[in-house]
Image (cartoon, rainbow, N blue to C red; front, side, top):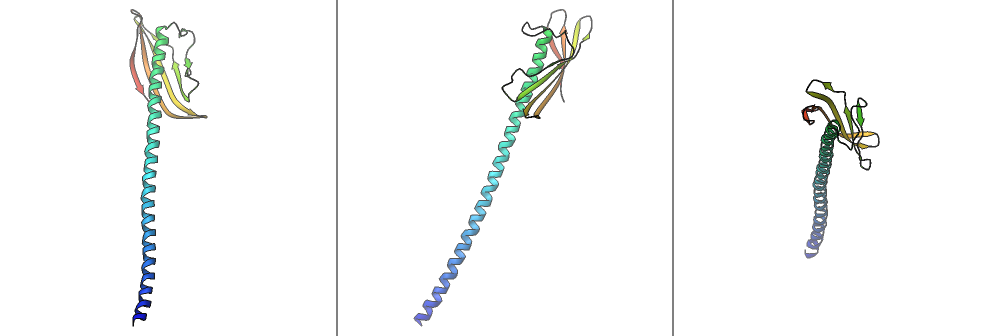
Length: 158
């Protein structure tokens, strides 16, 4: 009877070893699946953060383009006179980065006390020929003849 019991016990151990291996395999698959899900989510969060950063930089560059137009209109001595050619299209001054802006100053509407200039600025991140993270602002820059100062009458994001 002891021999039969030993054979029976041996069969039982083989079955148990197989089920432990199978259970371990399922646990490894489950942990791998959960880990891959977390990695995917973190990659998406990283890409979303990078896109937000590019968009913010484009927004700031578009605002600086409007300030550049205001300086041109006010007659900054370091820039050419904007009354020479209409419209003025000015590319971004920084050629070392992939950020660019295009500034467009139209001919003014002239009244007795002020000149109103329509200005548009498109800023973007350029990869090859593709423009990404665009920011487009249009404004009315008012030049007061009496004091020689400029102000923004309206600024619109499109």
